[in-house]
Length: 341
Image 1 (cartoon, rainbow, N blue to C red):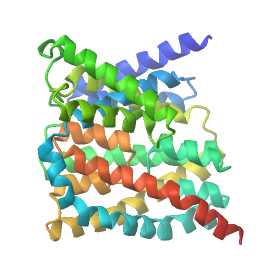
Image 2: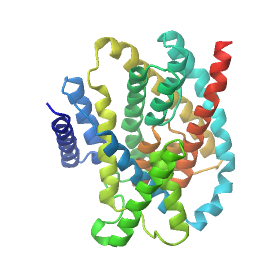
Image 3: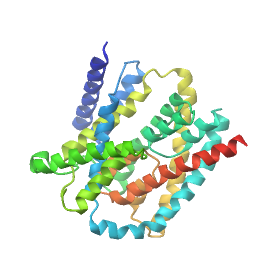
Image 4: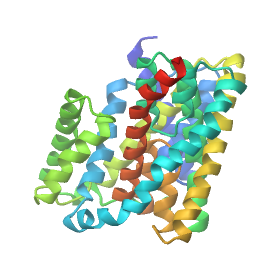
């Protein structure tokens, strides 16, 4: 079967997942529906394939959504996030002390794979940098896909139970209510920002580049609206398929080693995150929902999707995830030199 037919089949399975979740009234149908159904079909041995550039392209929507939410008032509030951001290095250090030994010694992974597998960052970023450092890409893919799947499976339940957020609500205005010029500017900011960030080799170029360019256009009054609901739903759809299709070709040995490692790693990360979230809330540093999404160890794009729908402070959430991945990647060479010694 040609790649195009496999991709069309994959998108059809994802669309069926959306319909089933929507029909059953389950939360986040455009995210959880495709993810769950693609996961099940992948485990049943069905060949799935996600077009890489399509996946990357729709991630730019999240960057545009973040950038268009940044106003002068939001910029003025950033210094008040300083104490919360200062907790991120401590969070990374504790999670490394807890999860790295698990992957290194209990699951016998090499040091590079264990490090990038243990870290709470974006799935795509950690795969790219882990591969460049000589890690096991298949292991990293399964470990992080499992962690992200676990976290974004639990997060909606917690959010709807504690904060009573309607996760079936429309995540923005309708496309028909958005001026065509605004949509055109958003598409331009997304694609151009991605291209510029990729040229500059910025971390998370598909989200960071569009976010920075859209922020400039938003602060200058050129972009005045956030992406319509249809664009947000499309980004959820393709991100979900990308995660679910990681399980294609899973063997029993890989399940016992890598998927189980991802489950245990995700549970440990969630436990450490819960301590920090509680600490932030008790001290009054940030509201509970914002702290929950900022310190939860899901992927950056997945957490942004949930933050948009839940109505959380996007700037607060995104800054924490960006700082986390920057520190993880920046400290890696130092740690590897120490490992070699």
